[in-house]
Image (cartoon, rainbow, N blue to C red; front, side, top):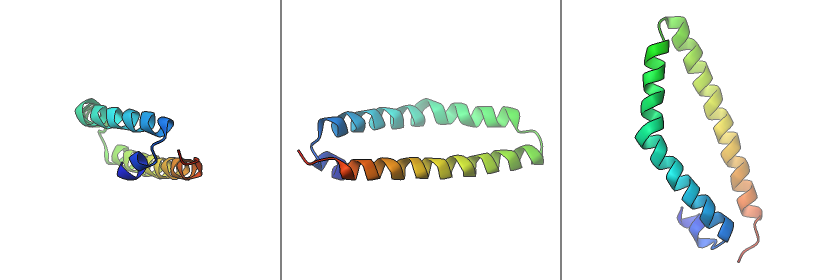
Length: 79
C-alpha cells in the first residue's frame, strides 16, 4: 500500500480504497461463506480433489491478474 500511496495518483487512490473495502468484506463475510459452502458440498475424496485443483487454478489466475495490474500501475505517469 505504501508504494501505491506514494504514487499520489487519483486513480490509484480510488483503487486503494476499493482494495481496502474488498479485503474487509473477504475477511468478514466472503471467507466464512466460502468455508460453509465447501463444507456442505464436499462429501467424498473426489470432491476434495476437485476443490483442491480448482483452488490451485484460481490462485494461479489471481497471480496472473495481479501481476498484470502491477505492470499497468508501473506504466502510469507520475503526478
